[in-house]
Length: 484
Image (cartoon, rainbow, N blue to C red; front, side, top):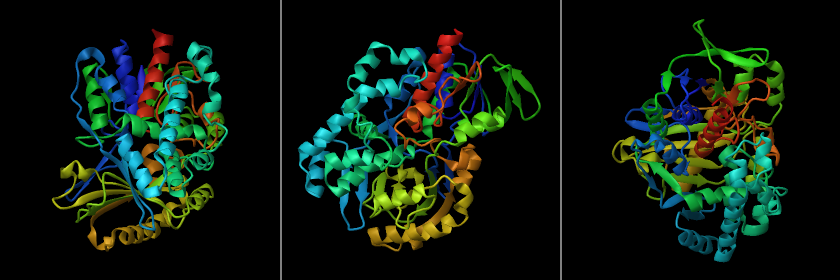
C-alpha cells in the first residue's frame, strides 16, 4: 500500500501497518520525513519550525516499542509548563506540580485552590468520558456508537458542557478575568476561538497538568527522526523528493498513484497524509467534494518570526505567553479576517534546554501570533506586526529588543500554504468552532472512494502531535480490519 506524505501521522500509520505485516511505501515530496516539523539554521542558531509543545509522550513510546526492538528517544519533563505575562506586569508561572500550580493561582489571582482543583478534576472527567470515544476511534463507524463504552458515555453527556462555549464555561467556573483568559487560550491549541468552540475543550488542560509537558533532548525535530528510523527498522520503503501527481481510481475504487515524472504505481490501498482539501483538489481532481469541504470554516494560521537574540533572559522559560489586554477583541478581529493591534504573543525558546540551539550567551526565539488563514492578505503583515511585537516585548522585558536581533527569518500564511499545501495556510485544517466540528472533519476512511484513507491534522481526530499519532493509529486499525 502507498502512503502519501511522511508527516507524523503518515509515519505513525506506516509503522503500525508494517508491524501488522503490510508492505508499505511512503512517498514524500520533501527531501526528508517530518512534514511541518522542519528545522531552520542561521549563523549558529537552530529553530524547530513546526509544533513546539510536546505532550503525551506515551503515544510515541507505544510506536517505538513495537516489535520489541526499542529505538532510543530521550526527553525530559518540564517543571514549569509555561510563563504567562500581562500588560499590567502580572506574571504567572504554570507549574507542572499540581500543588505548586494551585498555590500560584492563589498567590497571583487570589482564587481559592478548591476552584482550580475542581476545574482540573472536571477536565479529567471530560477526558475519561469522551477521550476514548472522540480521540481514539473512527467517528464514522456504527460500532463506535453502539458498544458498552459509548453507552456509558451517553449517560454522562451533560457533564461535557458541549452546549456552552469554552469561554462561557471558564467564566462560570474560574471567576477571575485573567485566569479565565489563561484557560481560554487552550482553544488555540487547534486554531479555534474560545468564544465559539464547545466547552468540551476544557479537557485540554488535563493533558498538560496530568500527563505533563515535555521537551525532546535533541529538539522537536527528533520526533519525526526517531519515527522514521522505526519505520525503516520495520521495513517501510521511503521515496523522498518524489511528487505524487494524482491518486488513480476507476469506478470509485482507488487503483494506485501517478507520479510527477509520468510513471504510475498500482496499489490496493492508498493513504493520504496530505491536507484533505489538497487531496481532493490536486490528487483526485474532485471539485465537488473539494468545494464541499472548502465551505467549512478554516482554523487560524500563524505569523512566525525566528529571531536569534544576543542575550539571555532569566524571566523567560521554554514556553511563554504575552497576552492581549482584550482577548475577545483579538478573536473578533481574527473572525473578521484581520489581526488585533495588541496580539497575544507565543514565545518558544528551545535553547533554554538544548543549549546548542544558540551561541553562548544567546537565545533562539520562535515568536508567533495567531492570524487569519487568508494568506493572500499577508503581504504587509510581517513588517507591521514585527514592529508591534518588538515594541510589546521590549516594554514587557525592559529592553530594546530590536538591537538584540542578530539572525532573522519569518513565515506567514502564504508560505505555510505553499509548503504544506494547506488551504489559505490553515494550520489545523477545519476549525473546531462548532460543537459538531468533530463529525464534519474528514473521516479516516473515505466514504466516496473505496480503499482510500486519510490521516493527519486535517483529518480525524485533528492537529497536534498526539492527535496526529492517534490519527495514524485509527487509520491503520481500519485498514487492518478491512484488508487483512
